Structure formats: C-alpha cells, structure tokens
Length: 126
Image (cartoon, rainbow, N blue to C red; front, side, top):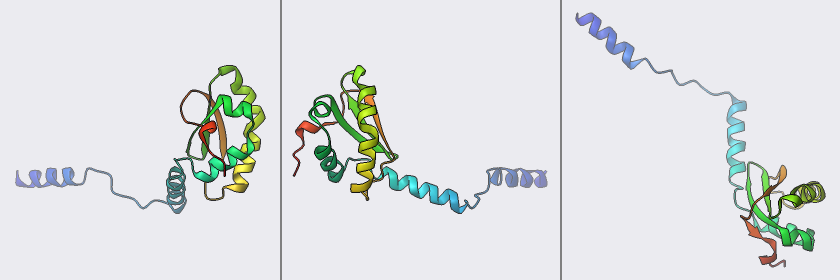
C-alpha cells in the first residue's frame, strides 16, 4: 500500500511536461517580435515624414493609427476612399518611411475604415 502511494506521488509530481530548451531561431523570432511591439506608438520621425509627404486630400480624410507588428495603420473616414488611398499612398509611404525612419520597423502600410488615431492636420511640421 505504501509503495502504491509513493508511485502515485511520483506520477503527480512528474505529470507536467518538462521544460525544453527552445531553438535559437525561435528565440530570435520572439526577440524580433518583442522589438517590433516596442514600436507600438507612432514616433515623431514617422509623423514628420508623413506631414512632409502627404497632400491635402490625405490630411482631410485620413488619421494615423498605431504601429503594431511592423504595420502602420491609417484610418480613412469614408469607405469609398480606402481603395484609392491604398493605391495612391501605400507604396510611396512605405518606401519613404523605410528610408527616413531606420529605428522604426514598418513593413506594411494598411488603410482601414475608421475614425480613430491622430489627424495629420493637428501635427505641426518643423
């Protein structure tokens, strides 16, 4: 009886999966994702580049969201303009931001319908 109890205690204690060492590639990917998440707030350099590059129509209809996972989100106030803004600005903004803002990782510029974010009309370029 005592031996059975000892076995049950051993089974309960060792039931969980043992901690395994993670591969170097997985650790590097986790570190990269952590660093990307640190760019969650839109930096001054990104706002400066956007303020210098965009036109009046962009300023009237778009608001700057956040940067998460390398994606800069831009909210457009009218659904019919989302496609137009994406075609007109996505590639230009991405290339310019990659050149000018080396410390902020931006892999993609996404345009979505919405009213959140920061209006470029409120930003002083200087």
